[in-house]
Image 1: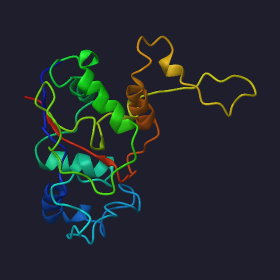
Image 2: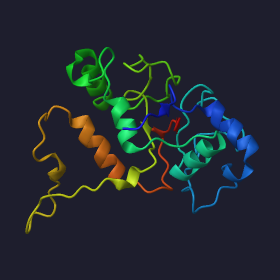
Image 3: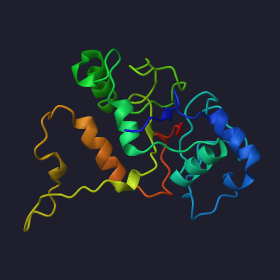
Length: 207
């Protein structure tokens, strides 16, 4: 894989606010409906006002892929690709391969098995992984550049069309790594204008 830079933490509300101040067309009241569905920045108090439940240091969420792309370009960066993001997310706390890191695996499984927090923690507050990158697997989902490149199909046949089967997991070696399949399944259900209260992003850059 070619070398790349990745932000240490997700983009924060404060950083996205600075982007909106410089780019009015991406403010909540002015964004085109082609580029963001109605819930865009719906947790903010106003176009340029965060509000009491949107801490400046927490990851910005409820933003579309289009908005994340625009922010990244404004910063002279880009969104990471799926393989870049997964490469970094796969690293454990003490080893490049997180499969052998018990503490890392427990952190991942714990995040996927608990309800979402009512208010997000500060971006960068998580334990750094092997590369020094924080919050890859225990704060928010994150947009990637090619999120819609994943293709999953079910293996149901005949009249059993109400069954949802994980055909993409056939032949997998480690069935305990279900978060990896959840990430792929989540990507396959997205559109670029979607916004969600637990979906943010971070930027990457080619050296």
